[in-house]
Length: 208
Picture 1 (cartoon, rainbow, N blue to C red):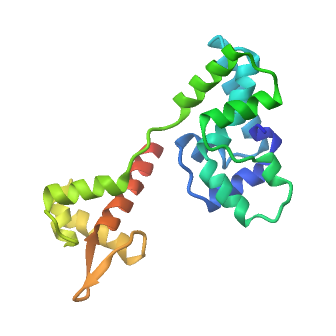
Picture 2: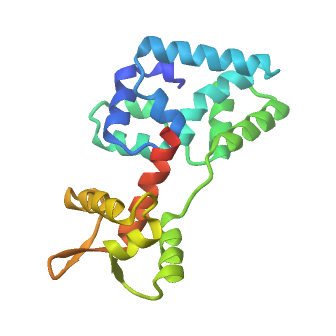
Picture 3: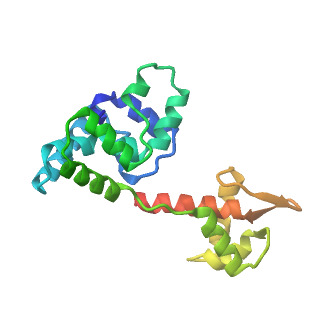
């Protein structure tokens, strides 16, 4: 169940068609077979050099993509006609499920299971509720309103020039990149618009 056990084009397709949660997957999933193998070897050597037991290291590398990108993987499987893929990419919804599944593949002692659990917990990025963040932002700067103008928003977020920032943001709305509404023919920024933009900016900054 490691990345090597699934053909690279499958990971590539998941990267192309699904929204990936982690920067690690955004870098690893688009790789070809040779690159994936090399990256896995490098990660394995690093973990072993840090004193990790080989059984725990192998289990960690197996479970990491299944756990971190479970939503993207399961969404992809729903569109796939390959009957063998669900077996190669089992659904893993929690660290506990990952430890149980890993223990079925290879015997792990209670101490090794504990170490694997700690490693997987550490690999999971913190969850950000962008909808809640948008609501708090609106309430703080604009009060209890359903939407605001792009210029209103640019006065708050328009670092480097409010007018230039507003023009760039309007271009995003014109191509349908973020949800929005129109009033009198003009784009208005809603809570959903802002939440989508926060999500976009968070992903962009992680890549930089």
